[in-house]
Amino acid sequence: MYDKILLTTMGEYMDEIIEHTLNLIQGEAEVICIYVVETSVPFLTPKKVKEMMIDELTAKGKDILEDMSKGFDKPGITFRGLMVEGNPADEIVKTATDEEVDVIVMGTGKSIVDKHLLGSVSEKVVHSAPCTILLVRTAN
Amino acid sequence: MFEVIILVLSLIISLIIVIKAADVFVDSIVEIGLALGISEIILGVTASAVGTSLPEFGSAMIAILTGSPDVGVGCAIGANVWNIAGILGISAIFAGLITTQSQEVRRDGLMAFLTTLTITTALFLIGEITFVVGIVLIIMYVVYLWILIRAQKSSKSKDREMECCEADKNLALNKKTILMTILGLFGLAIGCRAIVYSTVELSIMASIPEVLAGILLAFGTTAPEFFTVLTSAKKGLNSLAIGTVFGSNIFNILIGLGIPSLFVTIPVEPITIYFDAPVMVFMTLLLLFLIKRGMKLTRVEGIILVASYIIYIVTRLTIFS
Image 1 (cartoon, rainbow over the protein chains, first blue to last red):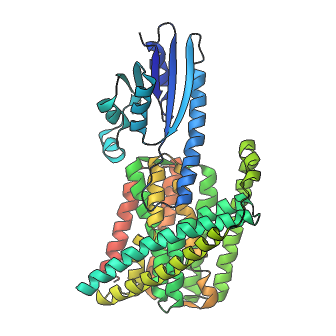
Image 2 (image 1 turned 180 degrees about the horizontal axis):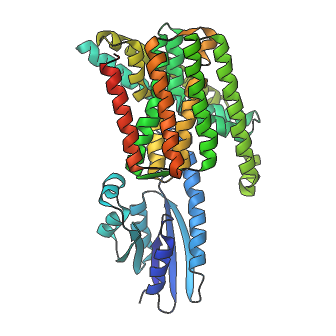
Image 3 (image 1 turned 90 degrees about the horizontal axis):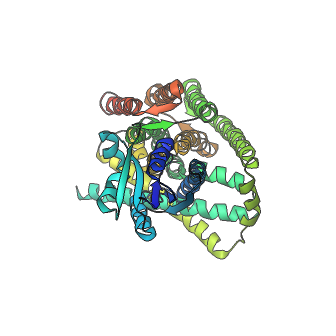
């Protein structure tokens, strides 16, 4: 039913997200896992600090994508890791549109306080996604 | 009233100039260092430690050397209290959780505590920051920097990928870099002078002591720390968040007060010796206690830190003003 799946992760609750994605797959499928390095920083953040943040987030992203690829190392599944820079919600929607995916799988489960203080990527994606979305309720 | 508005505007504009000039200066210095063949590790460690703290250092230095030592001392100590209780507290509230590693707490946390303890003890015993105290502070910073560089070297030697790229990063020294360094330094000097002038004038108009004005000035000079810590905590870069606070607090005292004391003995008001400095030690201990419990700072602990800051500043503004 779902031939092309876009999976989003920030490195949390990976096992739950992998498990739910595998449940969606019947036969063969292509899984694209996207990790977005959020590059935006406030105006007065030192340039060197911004570079350091991007370096650390990129290194973290590489590890996460590598771990994710192990979770999908199964017959019939083609895995592709994708690391992009920018606003997470915008990049997820853009990739889903460009790649013409059938479904987006992402975690959700922040508390109301966290949603207000940190924002919610999944809520933003829900409003502008070009396809079906599976929101995996995570341990939060 | 018009004069107050002009001074406040001048303070805000000069703060932005200083923060941006510090950015340009650190960037250019790193490029010059690379061109001269200085190790990228040494440059990286120094740049990240100095980068966010230059506004406090510049303001404290200019204030002390231009006859307003209370503003300088207030700015350094005020920045340290605000970094821990305000910035880290607010960041923990927003991020919900800031985790840390025992190695970082043992190295940077212990050094931050030793720093505050050294300066407070010196103030209790001598009552001012003399040349000898300054030398001790600077030696402590050199030792700390050496420990940081050694730690960085050992972590980099484990990462072959990063090591192989190091050779490619030698840059040629060009005129633009030198010009930017001079411009950055010029912006820092002019901006810090304007900050100190505006702060002193505003403190006279508001009839508040210069030390208190320095403590309040720290809200502005720590803006780079504020945005660094808050953003990195929200992005889950916890080591950067905690490391920035400890690194800045160590730099503010050891270099921010150490360097100016080589040129002039810094007199310190009794209220700073017997109230502000002990509060700084207490806040450092409180942070270490909260972090040590589970190697993390939760939202509730963030609220405790911010509440401690509010109690401090209200007491300072009302009872000890």
